[in-house]
Length: 212
Image 1: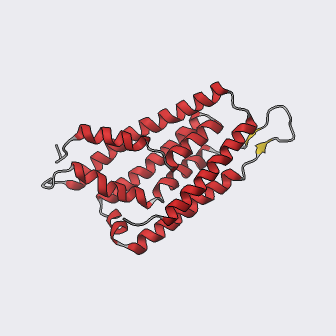
Image 2: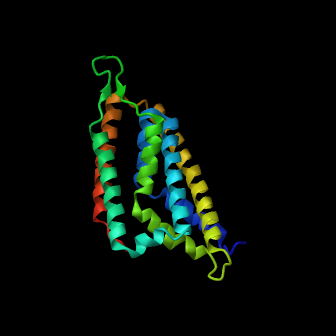
Image 3: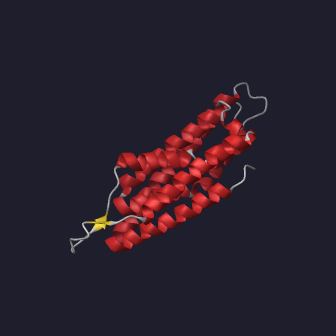
């Protein structure tokens, strides 16, 4: 239907790709551990929105510009890397809320709207995601399909739906594990800072990445 083939293989491959570690998963785990599953879900929703932006852009041919124009790829790459590094610095500078209160200080919470925007921008500003969809999705569309953009959007929506199931599951699992382990606020703070260091590394890695 719509020129799509090997849908089962596409779904399985997509789930395996979603499990691979990256800035999206790190962001969900960090927010879930620090503020609970709702915060992790807010990040996941932002990531899902960003994914659909990439899907629609690829279906309309806009992402092809990133694969053919070195200048466009470099601009998006550096903006994305700068934002990820900015997020990492923010996590490294995190402080305890109410440090003057000895009983139970906690890491300063972030509004869910801001967490959603973090997820959105982390995903949208990563040109590697756009190139991924251009390389991966067309493999499951027949070359003689009468409506390739529609087939692309359908497959992208399926990929995103399955990804959202995984991401929300990751948010729930991380929040549950954090609660069961009863992680102390100070330990949570240093975990947050550790994640910040990882985001810095990911930002540098993205900045040094090549177009191909």
